Image (cartoon, rainbow, N blue to C red; front, top):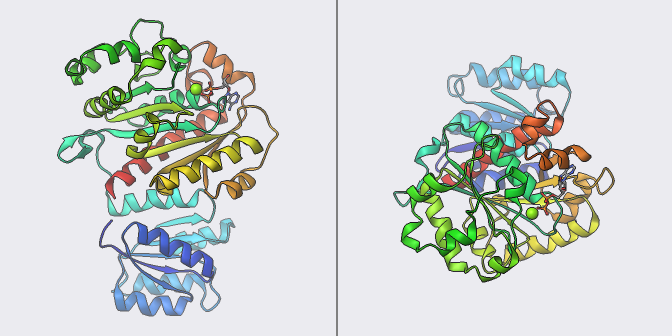
Length: 389
Ligand SMILES: Nc1ncnc2c1ncn2[C@@H]1O[C@H](COP(=O)(O)OP(=O)(O)O)[C@@H](O)[C@H]1O
Ligand SMILES: [Mg+2]
């Protein structure tokens, strides 16, 4: 969103600075003010493309503030977005009635929601089939990783991939299981055939092209994506070569709109280059102290490897039970916002896995299914947004 301008009005200094940074990173021209009256003057002087404001104002009534902007010829068309520290429905109603375009309440979800609003307003979302890089088709790369096993990485990778397909029915989606030395997505989705990462890696590189993948990778009916199953056993896994895997992933990027990789705990020489290339890095954490601390170590390492926090999508998965840290406690240790929390599903989750069924088809009305759907939609938007920048 290069070249757009935003006027940010917030009485709270920390909020103001945070929002200013958020917009600067998106290459907006940013002006910040701390009072309603000041905002009016600047808005009429500069005519920004967007006015983002916290409706909690002490120098002017919020209705009056909005109305003044709405009737003045210089701001009559300017989208007004409220990012409010007042969660009450009354404030929301007042603002929407007075003519704000969108009313968001400050929370961990506010920034992804704001990003969606920006896409709606300034329309940088690209249709899935034309995602390209250097003129060549290059699908969005989404990696799944965790600092520890058993956090639900593989199950969520498969389930979120399925939900991405639901959100993007036109898109071609592939899931590749790169967990070494042995993969686990095939048993989750119920694939029992012969083809896997090791057999594909054995083929001459010229043969594993777009047509090869489209024609040969298994498509599981309930899951609606094509799968490159992982290494079937440690013996095969241990001899797989890193450069062959990178090559396979590059070819998958020419063949699919979304390439979803399970790389498990692998920060190895194979995993790291894939993480560095990813449009979105999905980091699965469970809410226990040891996983969170280990995850913090992984995050610190990723930072030294040039990975931007903006590309990291943290999911808190209550894979082991109801106890553990709260989301806020986990966020404090990680120093990152947790974008989604998946509830503990008891034995239902394992049951769906054992029956090789997606959570979404097995338990369509469960909260987890609703969260998976929203998460997949958010991930798609964010991956695109990262690509566009
Ligand atoms: N939200 C959840 N509620 C209940 N069980 C879960 C949940 N998430 C994962 N599990 C269970 O945790 C186990 C480990 O999942 P898996 O996807 O193999 O993790 P990982 O790939 O991180 O090792 C599986 O038996 C799965 O059914
Ligand atoms: Mg796994």
